[in-house]
Length: 609
Image (cartoon, rainbow, N blue to C red; front, side, top):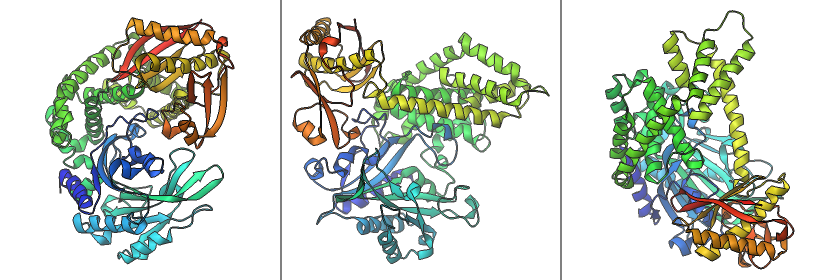
């Protein structure tokens, strides 16, 4: 069964059973606090939590979709059997349990019916996992009994803890619940003889469907039962395709094999001898095609940084396989052919895709020729031949530092450097594994620092902010409201970044601001500063804050109780702070620059003098 049939049969199955079929939403979510759409439920989170009325929006509480997703956490893992950046998630939902909703039994019945009667998977290979319970949520005996009624033997229903079978909440507080997962046994040829689902040593068992029962709400005091219970399920299309096409991984299915064959044709190398490199190239290029089609361009920040990273990793693979220039364009045509009937935009935007690929290849070539990069590569080469007597720890750290610089500065993957130096010197580095582990540790710490910065991204400053940063943060409130007065209420904050010297404010607006508009915004801000308006803070429930007229554009990131800052009667926003007490403390506001940072998003840089 090819991938298109699986996708079609899934959607038809649920449509015939009263579900409204939702088209895939964009990979670029409306929630500006996250970079990409990572799951089908992402756009439904406010309906699942009960904050929005699903019937009013969709006319049906039963929904299904095949959702495009992009995840960034596993980029370094790409090349194995299971990880992908871009993928499709099949899902169905019952939002809110009332007389026409379904919960555990309904969700399990649908999943079992589809897997056994539509996909024709062997029942004897089906294993199930359930939540074993904890001090807050009891063991999910109900799901166990439902599966037993469906003919799954008790011994093939296993209990696991929070890490495997408890979903959520996404933030510190919110809806959550136990899960039951369907695992498929591919046989001992794929791993251990006597293992079971969630084996950490092999890929014999593949989780093909995850059913989440959102029956609880986590709050500061603990967990409470949700009156608004929902079902949220997810099934990976790539995994299903691999099983139904009897392939060891999705890379051998119809979703990838045309690209893999083209790489073989271009390089004269066999996939079986170059699995990791072929897979990295096929995966990253597929993800890049979809990101570019949605308007993402390579850059050094946010989404553009992710695109640049996967493209440069792809280009390093091309170089190591000695592929000719513009091979990415040739391969992207294969990706477009695979998806053009499902997602027509990839074909409509093919010229944009080809242009971005060509320009990025040219830029990367120049980056590799930078003096700093050449110098670092030369230094690694000098140290490549390990002397007999060395300080092992210092040597490993030195090479790892140089590799980290290349990874961070120009997106050069360490495996490319290793491969190139081994080819050039004819020698393998015996400490390659130790160096790689040290480098991974450095990258991990770098990511932790980046995540810490991202947490401040949409609040602008942290609790340890300087006095100058606090002033600039308060100024963003004045700037935000002034932009709305000059440009219109369509303006909404898309992010801010503040340090002790300047503020950076991103907002929605479809075109470049005129000089007169910028001057008017600046004038309004300075007028409000001179008026010496009082800045006041109140704490209240989020809903009350919204009803009172406070602006809040990052709805999914706020707790139930929020802080609301008012600047006189001019500005009122939900915000964590901190702020000055009166606007006269700010000084003179000056806009330094205004530019585009993406489709429909502008950026202002400003200072206080």
